[in-house]
Image (cartoon, rainbow, N blue to C red):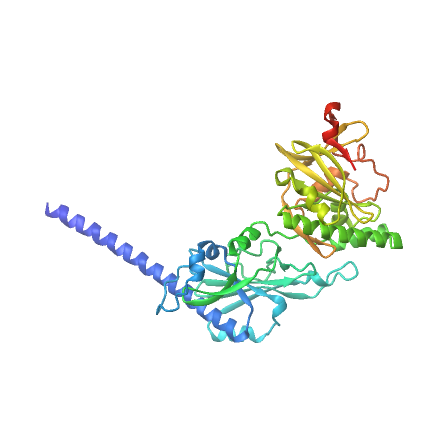
Amino acid sequence: MARINRTFVLTLLIAASSIFLLFQLFNYRQYSSKHLLKKFLGLVHKFKLPVFLVDTASLNLLSQDAVLYRDSQLKEPHCSFLCTHRDFTTFALLGNLWKYDAALLDAAAERGLELLEIHGKDPRLNSMDDLTAKEIPLHFLFRFNSRLVHVVVLYERSGKYLWHGPLRLKGSTDRTYAPFAKLDFGRHAGAYDRPELILTTLDGLDVRIPKNYTHFLLEHSSSRFLECRCREAKAFYQAYPEDTSTEAMDFRMRAKSLLHLASKVLSVLGVPFWLSSGTCLGWYRQCNIIPYSKDVDLGIWIKDYRHDFTQAFQKDGLPVKHKFGKVEDSLELSFQGNDVKLDIFFFYDEGDVVWNGGTQAKSGRKFKYVFPRFNLCWTELMELKVRVPCETEDYVMANYGPNWNVPVKTWDWKTSPFNVQENGVWPVREWDDVIQVY
C-alpha cells in the first residue's frame, strides 16, 4: 500500500511539474510577444509610422464588444488578442503616407530588434515604355527572441485601391529568419479597398484596426493580384504595332468609361464580376482594350444573378439591348453604352468545367462555351481594379486556341471560338421569353 501511495504521489508531482512548466512557457511566450509589440509600437510612435493591425488570427478573435472596450485601466492586461498561438503578428503600413527613413534600422537595433527589409520593383512605374522600375520597400520583419512583427507595406495604385507586393527572398537571405511560408501576407501580391481605420486599445496597447475588420478578412481570403504583363505586351506591339488612330483612341476612352460605369453598378449591387472574352484577352495579351472588339465583355456566376439587374443598369443610363436565355440556362444580357456594347455572360457549373451560353436570335440555336474551372484574382485595367481568372492563359486558350497571341479581326461568335459547342435549339413556344431584342 505504501509503494502504491509513493507511485501515486510521484506521478502526481510529475504531472504538477509538467503543468507548471507549460504554464511558465506560456507566460514566457506571452511576455516575449508583448515585449516585442511594445518595442515595435515605440518605433511606430517615434517615426510616426501609419500602421494598423491586419493580423488575421488577431482580427478573428475580435468582437464588437472587444473593440469598444478599452482595457487601459488595468495595470497589466493579459495579452489575449495580439499574442496568438503563432510566432508572429502582422501590421500594414500605408506607404503613400510615409517617407522611408534609413534611421529606422539603427533605431530598431537600439531597442534590441533585428530588422530584415524586403524590397521589390515598383509596378506603378513599370510600363511598356520603361521596364526598369525602381525598387521600393515591400515588407519589414522585426525579430526579438524568435518572435516576429511582420509589416506589409500597402501602396495606393491609380485605381484608388491599396496594393502590396509579394515577399520574394534573394539568394543571400537567411531562410530561417522567419516562418516565411506561414506569414499571412507575401505569398503573392494582393489588392484591397482602402479601409476606414479606428483607434482602439487591445491588451493595454493602442493600435489602429480596420473598422469593418470582418470585411477586411473577407477581402484577404481573395486578395491575390496579377500584374499586367508589360514585357509580353511590349513584344506583342513590336510584332503588331498599336492602332493609334483617332477612332481607336476614341473607342478605348468610351470603353474605359463603360467599364468604370459597369463596375460601379455591379459594386452597388454587390455582384462580383471578371473580365471575359475579348476584354480579358486584351488585358492579358496587350495590357489594353482591343480597339476592334467594339464591346466590353464581363463574366458573372449565375448564382450571383439578381432580378433587378436590368433596372440598375437602366437607372445609370445603360438600356437593355438584348436578353437571351433564362436563369436556368444560357442567360446573357447586353446593354447599350455610348456607341459601345456591354455584354454580360453568366457562367454555370458543370462538374470539372464551367460554361456560358449563346443564342442566335433569328433561329433560336443555342451554343455553349466551355472553360476549365478557375479562381478569380484582382488586376488593374484602365485605372480600375477588376477581377480576371487567375489561370488566365488557360481561360484565354480555351476561348481563342493556341494562337491567341495573333490578332484576328474577323470573328464569328458561332464558329470561331475553340470552345464553342452546339447546345440544341430553343423551343419556339419559349422564344418570347428567351429571345428578347430591344
